[in-house]
Amino acid sequence: MTTLKFRNNDEMPILGLGTFRSEPNEVYNAVLSAIKMGYRHIDCAAAYGNEKEVGKAIAEAIKQGLVTREDLWVTSKLWNASHGEENVIPALNQTLKDLQLDYLDLYLIHWPVALKKGTEMPEKASDFIPLSEVPLTNTWKGMEAALEQGLTKHIGVSNFNENHLKVIMATAVHQPEMNQVEIHPFLQQETLQSFCVQNDILLTAYAPLGSLVDENSTLRLLENDTLKTIAEARHMSPAQVALAYTMQRGIAVIPKSINEARLLQNLETLNHTLTVEDMALLKDLDKGHRFIDGKFWEVENGPYTADRIWNA
Image (tube, rainbow, N blue to C red; front, side, top):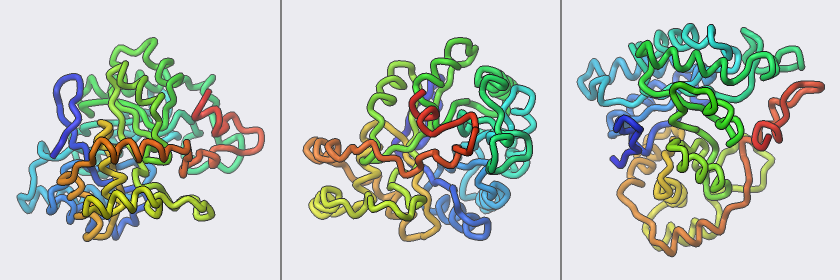
């Protein structure tokens, strides 16, 4: 397994299993099957509503002797309703309880968006807290405390732009080590990647195969002719081409699947290498297109807009 190396030389498998939108009764089987196949990196989040099932699968895999806890890399994320220094550790403790773990390998702030306690998805402006009232730097202090207490081995962020990162980095005792964002051939995030490389921040790509969250979108990454042509020439699937492209850029990928054949196919991407010519053709596919556009954070008179989240 190819890995990405953290500052202290800890290594994270470059390919992991995403668990976003996997139903609780499906995610148990997916995680257990994935571990049996050789996956060692599981990406979770409190907001996905399935960490108890993920935890049961991890516990079962350890019980069966398939892996030890130390063999696994487990990431989770702080939900928006737990921003604020005093809320981070209680939220993380709940995640650890649900996952049946003593520590995480990586804990991320899920979004640079703060919600009032108990809010899952906001419906009105009063469900939000502006960042002027609960600054990202304040929440980061809670993340640093979690790191210092050994509840997580590494800390980072998700869906953060360059300016959000700069805000945290200006006062951080422990600098962010990971930014998890949407990346795929249609959204290559080169400017953000360059900034992260310069500042020793690793990247993880979510939705590395595109997404059907926007069912009205006419864009289908895996139906792209360039991907299909390269896939045919290299005896790969279009999904494997998309994953290989991002991994060969030094970015981790966490494709989500509950289908055993696709889980195996995704893992077998590690056996393939794209040529310099393939990489150049795929680089030309960048459209700056977000499948996860962030507009669900926009409500009338609310403090957040998608444009500000991605660009401000």
